[in-house]
Length: 476
Image (cartoon, rainbow, N blue to C red; front, side, top):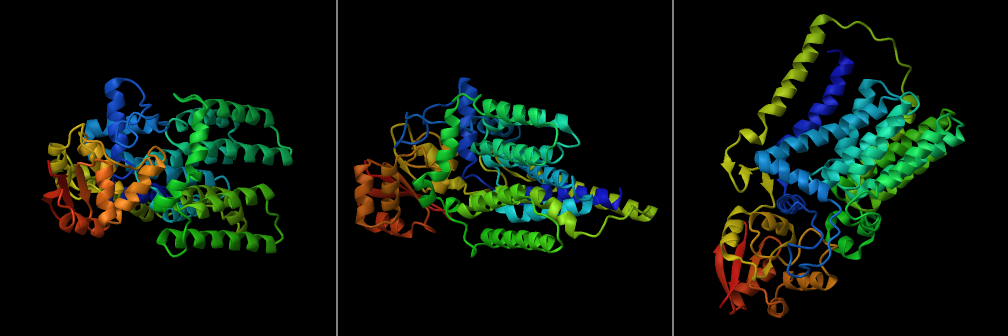
């Protein structure tokens, strides 16, 4: 275990350890698990909304159906702890692939460092949800393109990756974009192999349409980012603020990239225009929304690797390392590997609903149990949007008002949801107009609604309350 191999091992094991010990949010995950369960039970892809009373039965372009099926298979086989194992594998794979791509120009140690830097910048976007599959496939495509000059046959794998990607997450369009940049770069440099890369681009475009919804996935992918309701209601789809932790890391990394390019230019080395354009595009995506920071975090390290290499001193011939140091390196890797295994939530006690103790976030277990016993198909459940995904899995009997799929729920329902969350008499009037039968309140974010139901809502009765929140039912 040489020092260089140790760095590559760290680029894989440290992210895996971080994913293993972090709590897992259910906001975008639990409803996908439930959707996967429904698809496995019926043997068909969901095409209509089964979860909300505001859009029930309406067409749903379920582009992420593949992720839902995989999540449901893992959760059914190994519970929520099994999904943590999947989470750790995906995060480690993404960072490892970035290191592999950067190694086209950098040695193992600097390649591992830039990959880990990207991991730190994009860590907030690496929750277990469909987007994480997109991040892994994005890193894989960039690694293949980085090595296309030395491993030209690998480019034929890209259309297969796009085929999977288009059925897992809407970010699949980044692959044809990256291939196009590589194609133009080779054309300008007059490199050989243009025809295979052009064929790969064409096959990738065809593969992106091989989904249950055909080419409509392109409309879905481009529509999500421009949906006004999404950018208004979902914090991570709003502009990236430099005052947030994610924003501060993002803008600091952009500044670092600019500084590196300026330093290279001062040395007299040319800066490829296409690389600058690609970096600028990724930076704009990251600035447009916090959720877009992931693409900068995992795309910029590979694009900047050649620039970083120009700033480093010439690589020296590797020296033989002392045997004791080799053994010490091996001990570090073994200890980290054992730590990843030892802290797996699979070994912690828990229950069938919430899984291992302390694992899930946005998953009020007590409220879910009570709701599961009260709600039926004829009920109308108004619940906080961050909890709706959890209730759709843990208490699937009653349809909710809104959930994580902002694009599915009509704008009028989101307007009503905002009115209800604000509390007061107008909230009670909106609940009456919607014929809501159950209201779940998070006092931490909906204190005004909580007060209104307790003091103004004679039609409502407090049926359950715990440290997470309160559940009110309409008087029959």
